[in-house]
Each structure stands twice: as C-alpha cells, then as structure tokens.
Length: 280
Ligand code: AMP
Image 1 (cartoon, rainbow, N blue to C red):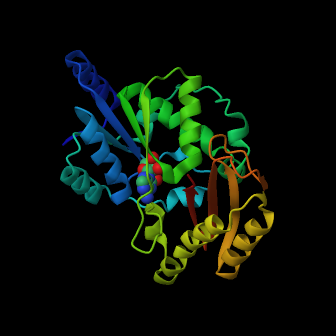
Image 2 (spheres, rainbow, N blue to C red):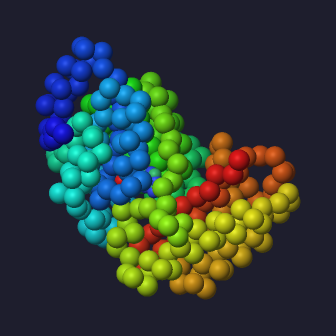
C-alpha cells in the first residue's frame, strides 16, 4: 500500500491514474479503523480499479474540543488493517496539508439539514464536515465515494454539498456493521469503560423498540418512552426521533406510508454515540 502524506504527491499520483483511465473508489475516515470502515474498503475494491482511503482527524468538524483531543488515534494498527484489506493508497495528511494558510471555503447552504438532529446539537459540525470532504474530493477525484449509513444525516449533508459544489462522483452508502450484541461499530466505542460498553447496547435495543412501536398516528409518546428508557439506563439523550427517510423532516404524526428513519444520539458519560434504523 502506498502511503501519501502531501497533497502535491497525491495530486500527481491521481493525475497519472486518470491518464490511464482507472476508476477510483474513495473511503474518507478519521482512523481508529474497525470492521465498519473495512467493509467500505472491501466494497470499493470490488467495484473500482483503485481504492484510496484517507485517515484525517478533522479539527473543523469538532464542536467539542475535548472530544477532538480524546479522539482515538491508532495509525499503526490502521495501516495493518488497510494492508490486510488490500487498500491501494492511504492518504495521511497533516492539518496544514488540508488547511494550508490562505485556503478559503464557502458557507455551505445546507438549509433545514443543518437545523435538526446532529445539526442542532453539534453547531458548526456539518460546515466542518463539508470543508474536509469538499477538499478531499477535489484532491482524490473519485469515481465512487463510499459512506456509511451509520452517519445517516452526514450522508445527506455530503450529497447536498456535492450538489452545491457540482461534484459528480457517485455515492455508495453502505449498511451499518454491528458488534455481536447489536452495538453499531464506532471508533468512539474504544473510549467506553467495560460497564459503559455493556450499557451501550441499550441504544440498539431502543431502536428495536421504536421500530416495533411504529404505527400510524402520533409518535411522540414512543419517542418519550425511548428517551426515558435511555435516561433511566444512565444516558444523557440528545434525541430519539422518527424522521422522513428521504428528507429527514421530523415526524411526530405518521401517515403510515412515509419512509421512516429512526435516529438516536445519546451520551454515556463523555462519549457521544449515534445510531439509526432505516425502515423499508
Ligand atoms: P469515521 O471514521 O467515523 O469518520 O467514519 C468514516 C466512514 O465510515 C463514514 O462514512 C462512516 O459513516 C463509516 N462508518 C463508521 N462506522 C461504521 C459502521 N459501523 N458501519 C459502516 N460504516 C461505518
């Protein structure tokens, strides 16, 4: 696997691949890789001539400084995992490579998407996500961008940013990979204590409960029950909500036909966990 650390070398490399006409699959990550990330690499490999993964803990998307400082970094293990998965290129830039002095970004007009759920509870987060993905896409110029459904709202935000910026890569959204007990894999899971790790599965159980309870009419009582259940189990809940799976509009009264996504964000101590179920 080729490890490239500068934007200059990456651009030279990508230009050569374009000349040959190779298709490029791109998997952006913040490292501390787990089987969820690797599933994206595997899918990219099966559909493209070349797979590029980036590992970059993006400071502009952390609205909480402490969360940034404590974000897990396991680069040696990440390299081993990427090599074992057959990844072709690892882009491993410094903050200065991604954000050199003088670089400017637009204000991304994300509209409603930025006012609800993650947008509401993490002010500025999605502007940071858009900046880094915009920059990475301008360097890697992939044929297909691979994203995880685990970050459901982020997928919608990135698609919107690509529309705003006229970026034409295809987007492949990949299912959430889970631990045996149902907990969605996440780099932040490594920050949980043993007891918290056992508690964390309650998010999956609550999603399962909310799925079973979904029926036409008011959903607010079920949302409240879900919040109460998590709170009683030691979580600090940001939201446990039903939304329109296509627009992410929050739904408090369901007509029985609108496609639904159920989304939860909750803290165990300092560690913020998110998960969702998309209902078909
Ligand atoms: P991150 O390193 O957390 O920024 O994630 C990098 C990419 O991996 C994003 O597109 C995530 O949605 C995706 N991802 C994270 N966790 C999972 C998971 N458990 N299953 C599938 N994809 C995931």
